[in-house]
Amino acid sequence: MRIAEVVCTFPPYKGGTGQVALDNSKILSKTGHEVVVFTPWLSTRGGSAPGGEKNDKFSFKVKRLTSIFKYGNAAILPQLFWQLKNFDIVHLHLPFYGTAEIVWFMKKIGVLKSKIIVTYHQDALGDGLKGNFFNFYNRYLMPRILNSADRIIVSSFDYIENSKIKSVLQKYKDKFVEMPFGVDLDFFKLREKSKSLMKKYNISKQEKIILFIGGLDKAHYFKGVNNLIKAFYKVLKSFPDARLVIIGSGDLKFEYEQIAFNFGLRDKVIFTGRINDNEKKKFLNLANLFVLPSINMGEAFGIVLLEAFASGVPAIASNLPGVRSVIDNSVNGFLVEPSNTEDLKEKIEQILSNDELKDKMGEEGRKKAEKKYNEKDINNKFIKIFEKL
Image (tube, rainbow, N blue to C red; front, top):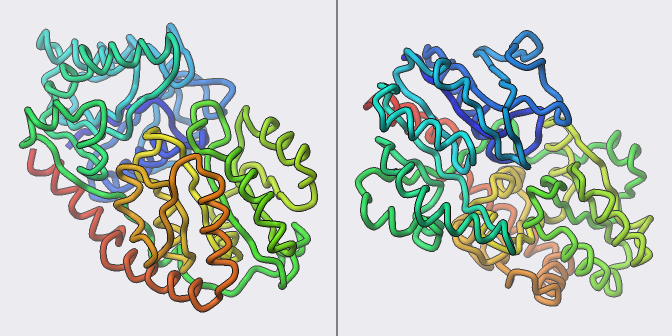
């Protein structure tokens, strides 16, 4: 089959949506299908030149198109009117404002003959004019776009049942397929702590490491990093040997660094910036616990929670639809009330104060990753969705 992946962001830009599109493309191309990724070219985020693929070292093509308008991760790609011809399936990742409407319109007027599979990642949320736009879009346009799809993949029904598109689920439930994300259990696993990494960041054996991994740009404001820093400040009163490691990059990084500086945490919070996957797995092996303190439903799942579980690391995450389907409260981690820094502080301290609990939660996390999130099993299910169409 010829399959087009249409997505608003793609590596080297760090973000869950683009990473999922990358993983999907690898799976499909490895199975023998011809895959072409269509994504906006954004000069501030790296990548190859507009319209080219020569700098993208993948087993599939990546076409980075120049948009006639872009705002944040929204972009309008009119080139798709002729670029999407002769594909068997168009796999559209939502939300993708400006381009999802083009795909829908092409299907509606009969220009696009392909089957459409949608992966709905998460709701777009905002305040003021942006919030009003999202509300209008979710009420009037998103249902039409989703209705044009032959299949709609979601990471959990728990999220969708509480999302902006729950009415679409109720009306077209037969189109929806629940498919959680998977994790590579051979890549992320228990290992010895990396001495070179500890030396590089001046981390001693006695220090307890609290880890966060995620985007630090405005598109990922919902990650709640500021709340994590505030909670960590409180934790230090009971655990002065704790360190907080924040992995990620983006235009909010300086703001978070200032918050840490204002709390007097310059030597206690490590901002690594962007790292590669090999470094990520080593940091997970260093961590006593992983924290995902998201503040709203901009967070739909949390793939990095699976990576923590596979690495034998207990996790703390906000009690939000979708995210709460990953963590079994008090078994492999804790759920906390979103934006409640006192609750977050108490749960962090429970794990830091009890090595037996930490180890038990880590074991349970690994068991769940093996049982429910094995990447090989998820990939087989994913391929079958395409091949059945």
